[in-house]
Amino acid sequence: MPIKIDNLTHIYMPGTPFQKKALDNVNINISDGEFVALIGHTGSGKSTLIQHINGLLKPTEGKIIIDNFDITLKNIKLSDIRKKVGLVFQYPEYQLFEETIEKDIAYGPINLKLTEDEVKNRVKKAMNLVGLDYETFKDKSPFELSGGQKRRVAIAGVVAMEPKILILDEPTAGLDPKGRDDILEQILKLQKEYRMTVILVSHSMEDVAKVASRILVMNKGKCILDGKPSDVFKEINTLESVGLAVPQVTYLIKKLRKNGFDISEDIFTVEDAKTNILKILRGGENA
Image 1 (tube, one colour):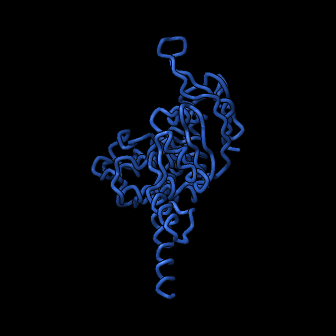
Image 2: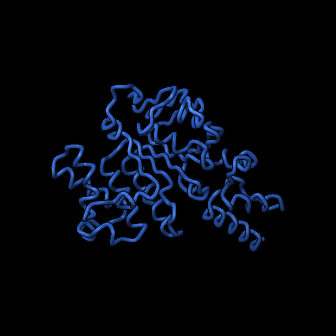
């Protein structure tokens, strides 16, 4: 079990007038190789939770086991945690700083004390996996690139460290539709190539529907829903009560079913909706 979170509570500024309970007795287990989406309204506890998994925050109560390794112990080195858990922050392109793309991606592996050949191999592999040709881009400045390309470089920098767990905080924020689709496609490719556990934090139900095999819904520091997308997206009233929604296409499918169309309710992406609606139309033509 790569991630085991037991009775996790976190209180910001305890004992002051500004005390706030950001996490409230959270219990979550995530298996090896799962693609999990973490969703919730602003202030629900998502960011606080992922910063505990990466060791940036320490629990007020509870513990976190990563790959049978208790990261909440006092003598744990953050560098040991970072070898296992990679975290890509929101707008990661703002963290690019080296003069070339190759140097930026190599920064993490170099700090892992890897050999020069191993560093180069990891940089090449990471660039290939995020869709950036090594020879074409290695000597370019990160600041010459488009927004989507910069984000790929930032993700490659974390991937090059080959963490067992990859956490991405709103990786498609601010990108145009093509940029969003490209990034999601690359993340799926990374998960399959490295067989890593992925936690995707997102406000976009459409993004979540495309890639996640499991969804965790946070509200007021608690995990209120946990299940497959087909199960979670059926809880429309619960999601709307905490300021969320289901994918827009799900509302369309619900209306079609209400009007007598024989179409599966387990449709959450535009692609699946298109396929199923075309089947119905062709069936009508053949009748």
